[in-house]
Amino acid sequence: MFSIHGVKLINRLKQCRQASTNLSKNGDIAPVFTNRNPRNLEKIRVAYKPDGYHVEKPGRRFWHKLHLKASGRYLTATINHFENGEVIKASTSEWAIKKQLYRTLDTSAYINLGRVLADRCLQSGIIEVSCNIQPPTQNGKVALFLKTLQQNGVTLEERLSINLADLGTSIVLKNHGKLQNK
Image (tube, rainbow, N blue to C red; front, side, top):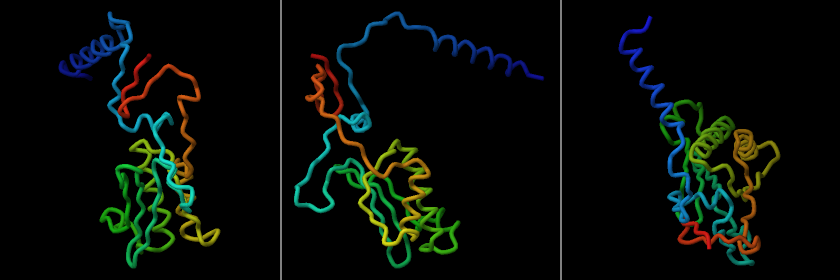
């Protein structure tokens, strides 16, 4: 059933699996941890979240914000980061999406664009976005777009950030990525 190469490959995979599950000899934890993911602090809700000014109507208290723009021919949805700008974009002008749609601005386009954007958000690790979009009608296209985003796993409201000073912890945050114990 298996060739000799197949048996050798299976044995090699078993050896690699055993080697990867063995405990290391150095069980000590390093006193300094360097985080190389700049978005990790946002995911654990301890990163800086801008406040903006109290007179601004939509406000700026977000890490990621949803924008929806309908032009004359196409529909574009983007997720913007407060520092880095556009992070994720989905549009009905993209060839792969446009090819599957009958029209690029009908209800079906809004629903399918919501599915594509939600999938891209989840693949990149964004599960919460701030959304100030108010749908004009209860069952309109925009409302269906937002409902589709929620059904596919994206929460349209970001939770509040945690202030470590209020918790009285001994962790110091430096340069958006290094955690050090005092």
